[in-house]
Length: 176
Image (cartoon, rainbow, N blue to C red; front, side, top):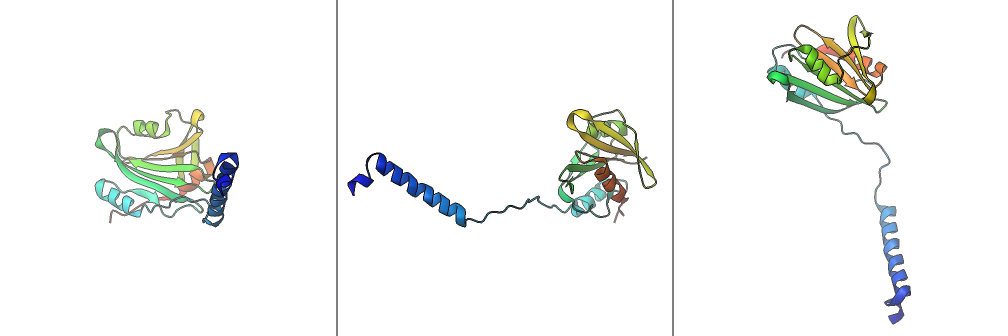
């Protein structure tokens, strides 16, 4: 028995027993091969935002097909203005974010959210025209719509059709 506990042979046997135990554990431990993106309901955040701001809040009437809402928050913007953020993993598993605020000047809010001030054309969504912006270094696409009481920004690594889909689902919510 002494030869199993001493020397190189004993070390090799002990190592084999340990590796066999780890292998057995890996064999019986549950493993998931499926992607998991946490889904966060934003309805309460949108309702709370509506109680804090003096204008009608915009939000998607429904989530785009295959998209997962995975973040939402209300934050203070410049000058104390409230900003609503809704984040998504798109069907193509890119990132998209919808932000809105009555921060003034509206151009500064849009520039900060998009990371660029230069328009790259327009995008027609239904009967509404959105301004397109593209930040080359981050491959970030953005749609901007400035209204009299609020600025809407949709931005992220999602492609133009995906951003346009989200823009088409936005509608004003009742103040409740």
